Image 1 (cartoon, helix red, strand yellow):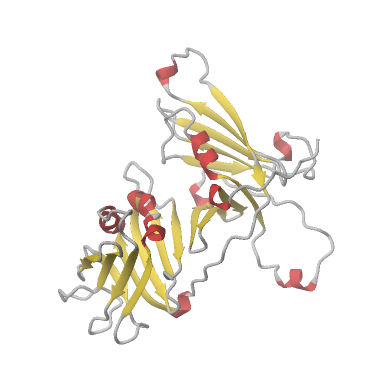
Image 2: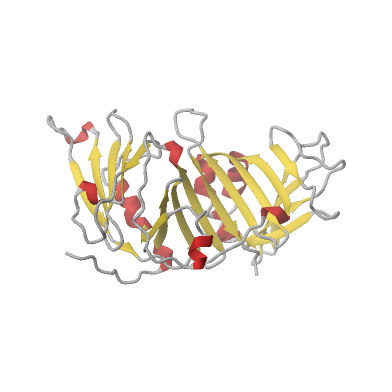
Length: 331
């Protein structure tokens, strides 16, 4: 049976999945003002191998120039459906380890055997009760993503092997994701702050009444690459309510326990100030809750890059990837 194309879905319900030799990337967007990427690096996996489908034999001059690009398999799927499947037993957690592998011996119309998959992966939450193990397979363009989920929970009362559920998620041809360019060579501001400090500030703001969030940073003297010892705040967040005509400001002093690093060496003399839709920035809250550090950067076009380094549960110090939010200036 040959694969068939799936009908289109609203873009807000879909995530773009990119698989390559360097790892996995999940991308979503909202209203063309926010693009978010979740990166899962290959070294997070216990074993990792990726074999992209063969490329056409005929090559153009432009393809020859792109030889340095990493081969990538890209498709879309319903993000809400994926998250619901991962929690199908009600015991899925954020911690775990992945394995990815597989080899491809046939074209997209080959059978659904293990040897025909472009990629397969298994997510192990651990052997202890109350966890979920997952195996993922993707055969190629036009085929679904297949999830095999195994519960390690004792609540089902099974004496034999644990229950296994198999789910197929329809994949879609990827649509072009709105591009929000960020140029680090033209960066005006960069700072590193504990994720909890940004999380606490954003969590205290009622999203229904806040319209814009303004980032401002003034250049200390002398210019630092590390936080100076003065007590004047070097970074501020100001939340403004248009309807109430009021604002709230959170100041961050140059304390190494608060701001690990501040770089304003390329900023103008009067500092940096940029405003964004609060609803767009607030989407970073779940990542900030599970993150260790956050990098805040603003370039000369006002584009905000907010990167959150993610850590596993259990106190491990090794990062398991990061999430990046790119936000354009508020209109």
